[in-house]
Length: 414
Image 1 (cartoon, rainbow, N blue to C red):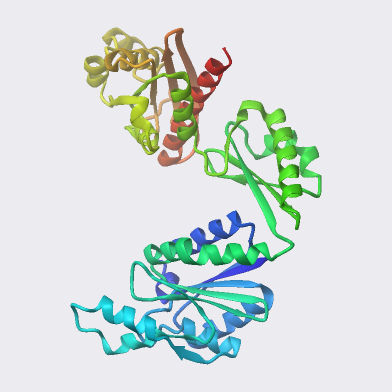
Image 2 (cartoon, helix red, strand yellow):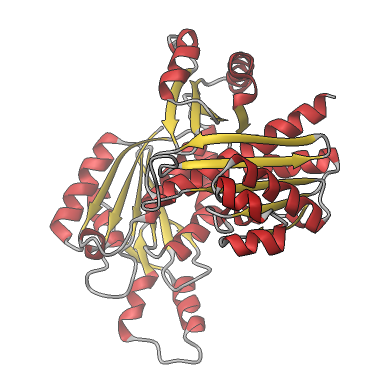
């Protein structure tokens, strides 16, 4: 099934409001195997929205419209959908009752009654977060879903009420698309193309490489009416990719490196502590973003100043004087220091020059040392990253997590 997303609202065209709804809906539809062909943003203008919706319905079997469900005169999404599809607007008493209940302690604005009218035959989509109910309109094997503009309302409505309807529709589509995503760290697009050339030349499954900045996605797609056959083909291709890339594949679907590291720490019954300089707590934050991280993460030390490295982590003043804070020696002492200070099995440390200033000829911007202390010793890597400060810091965090992941995988094999 082909789909389009139309986002309405003049505020989206002024550059002041980020259109997160289109991003969210595209991801959700992609997970369902629905291919999104177009994103269109239209201001609060009846003629332009009418033309946009007509074109969308001529091209695609499913059109999602976000915004334009409010009580004001420029909220026209339902009315325009009815006009384009040749349907009358119909009053829904239950919707009016819900609106009355919503305003039970306040005076209901006179124009609110407008929100109780829908294109005839609509499947209504309740709004648990506001007054504007959505609608799914079906006509001549085409589907048009009208959703509220505010993301907090739209996302709940999509997940609870529209998603189950779309799943029913897709089951009737013999050409359903099956998608699987493998997540890769440490290989860029050129390297992946070289390693996966043979697989990428196959017609099915088709392979798409997506750069996520700190990692790569390999997207496998099979279009088939036979779900079991499609799954077997995806399984076979995934096995081939894993064989070629080895531990470069860190997960699939919505996996994160922090989540995978957490599972491996639990599997090995190990605890972790962090020591951060240039990442300023970002690594610890990434780890604790995972539910259940308290079972393996003991804590961390953000030692930005040299004095903090000495007093909190036991880094030697002579090491700082002779080698400097950004050095292999200091990184190792930081990792071992946090491991001992917090009583953890593993300690990982980051120290470097995140930029944009502070670099020298010997220690340029992007130079970073990452150290992992464990019972068997200390591993230290020297890295050179490029990009903005934010980009460099994110790469440091993911590289540190990858270092942990590879160590824990080795432990699992022992």
